[in-house]
Length: 158
Ligand SMILES: CC(C)(COP(=O)(O)OP(=O)(O)OC[C@H]1O[C@@H](n2cnc3c(N)ncnc32)[C@H](O)[C@@H]1OP(=O)(O)O)[C@@H](O)C(=O)NCCC(=O)NCCS
Image 1 (tube, helix red, strand yellow):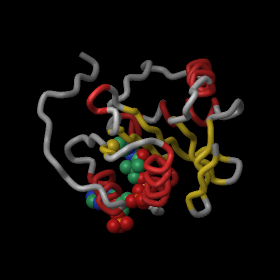
Image 2: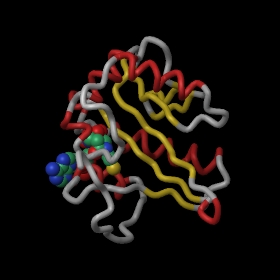
Image 3: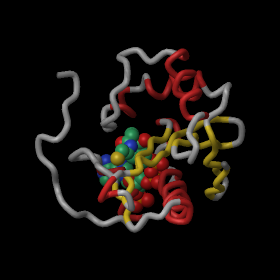
Image 4: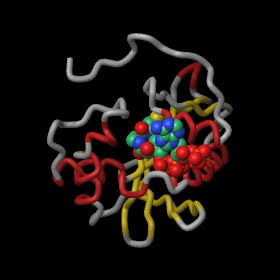
């Protein structure tokens, strides 16, 4: 599955992406504003397990963001279930060396269009940590609107 976002390619995770994935997940500047729980040291074996898991997705929802041969980010959907089945959560990160170049905005725009066209969705949403101004800005530029603030909803490191 390939989604073109300007010069960037949203593509399936592939063997060979392990080092880039591990190095970014070991960057606390990236993970401190992500709710996903990762091992304290994220090894290339962890990355391989993630890549293998993504390959099993019947409807792919988790993707790498590539610039030429380089993996420079990640974007994915969590499809909701039951009464919320027409809703999905979007999550994304960009490698720190590439921040501030408009990449997340370009990628999120293309990915949101893909999500609405591929799945029977009427809603996409994202959870953003308080103070994550860059992510708030990316979401606003892409057409997402602020709906509210959750309190005491996240636990990290106990
Ligand atoms: C959030 C993140 C994906 C943004 O990626 P990016 O490619 O740098 O984003 P863009 O360049 O498309 O846009 C960033 C916008 O935020 C603005 N911005 C960045 N830091 C800012 C700050 N501290 N205060 C205010 N605005 C800020 C930029 O100026 C830009 O807006 P502009 O185009 O109006 O100037 C990236 O910082 C990241 O991966 N962070 C860690 C993971 C994360 O938080 N993911 C989102 C979880 S909800």
